[in-house]
Length: 148
Image (cartoon, rainbow, N blue to C red; front, side, top):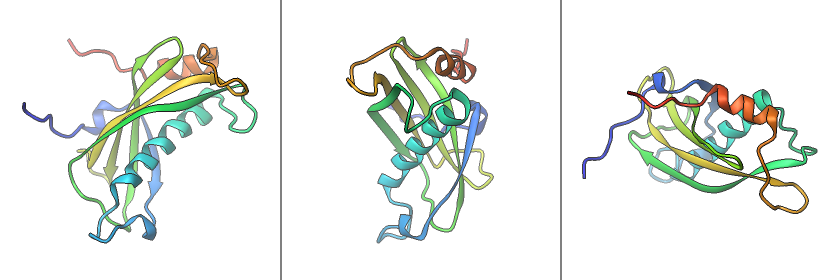
């Protein structure tokens, strides 16, 4: 099986700037793999908060992470400003699969890319519910159209 190459910035519709921290480096001198998952989480939730109307403390519907995946292409180390590219790869009635990639500085090729899946649930019961209209509209704006 041939491993696909890194994602390109042009494949993403929305970007979130993130500042790396000294504590993100591991003993090998680069940003630890688990930190990339934190970047993914930050980027997806930033989009929902700023574009989809999510209120972390009060929204009756929230997204819970049920799956995440990451492919690493090039190391990053502190101090590096990164950009997290976010798009929607699949939009269901109750879930969304984001494509997320991390770009170091002004690089156009991802240092890491992957996916992040939210299932939307009622805050109190934690039972799956339909994605609220405002969030759905925001997610549709960054929906990746299949290339022909």
